[in-house]
Length: 131
Image 1: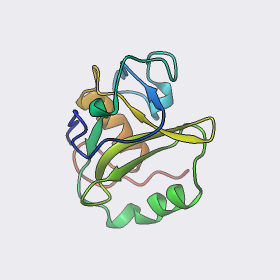
Image 2: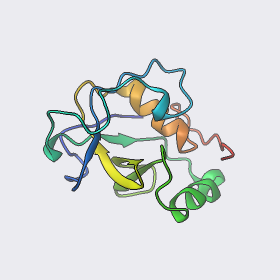
Image 3: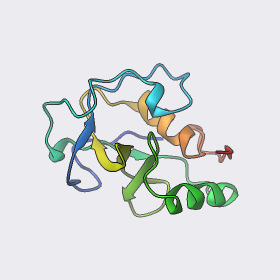
Image 4: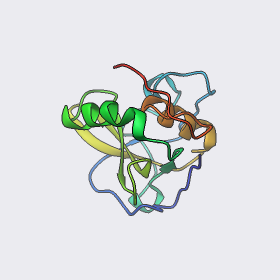
């Protein structure tokens, strides 16, 4: 599991919803992590955060499909523009709009929460979560 920054998976567009994300590692979802006020930041899309989760996807494909097909639900996350579904630029839904997460202070602990929320473990094994 990795937390590449500097728009490794390309620059997003629109709002940058989160900056200075500070997860402790015990949170179930990104919304439970401390962060700067939503939409208030000093970032550009050149600083969009990325995540690369474990590759074992087969057992959780139904969870990921369900999340993406249901559209933008408050607090959901998705990974965009990676070479596979287990990696990409982090996008976060707020006010029914997808936006990005700034890489300021974004680290492997923060990435592990996103992987967990999407049904992956930080160890690279699939751990399906029912939503």
